Image (cartoon, rainbow, N blue to C red; front, side):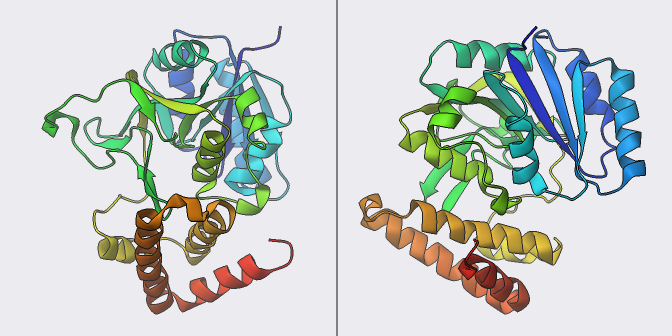
Length: 303
């Protein structure tokens, strides 16, 4: 029987952190799904450790082992093209869902064909700090996780169900027909970082909306704490491997190349220019190799 929902999970040396995710999927009140796993570890032994856990979970699943790491974008694209489920959820291996998460987001996305994507309220693992409540558009250079880093109990207003700019790829539900109409899921050249932002922009240009449903609750063990303030983020970014910083910087530049329009207006363009000048200057000063490697990658004929 064809499944209504395909849940896609990228694995990368995930065997030691996979158990909470698998347990949360087993306890979902909505069970019309098949889970797809793609292991990017480039390590057969590691992949088999993860496969054994998946098999033991009893979940209906497919398991793919990549010979070469294809990244977040490439791995999800492989899985997306391997099934025809009408709804697709991208789920990080370091996330877990409350038992009614799928029930709430599936009910919402099925209620309106204009809803292309949906997300719930995603906390960090402390259960108090918000990780993401959808994506928020401030300007083209600043599309961020909404309410990230806030404590829910410290807010004067409760987060309400409603339209948001887009959803995070860490715990994001998508309508296949809308994604295909917007040009497909991900371009493998993006490898990782900003691909969910690119998809959010494309879906909006195609006339679709994204929805935030706070009754759906999930948790995400984000690897690097989100800092407030641009200069603090520069220093925090230094904690990540250079290769990952290059992907993030190069893909931000790809966003401009793909989505810049004069119709964005003076305010958006001016704010984006200031932010990007500061970001690029900070990258050049603190990580010159990252800066030049990213530009070489972007200017290559195949980019």
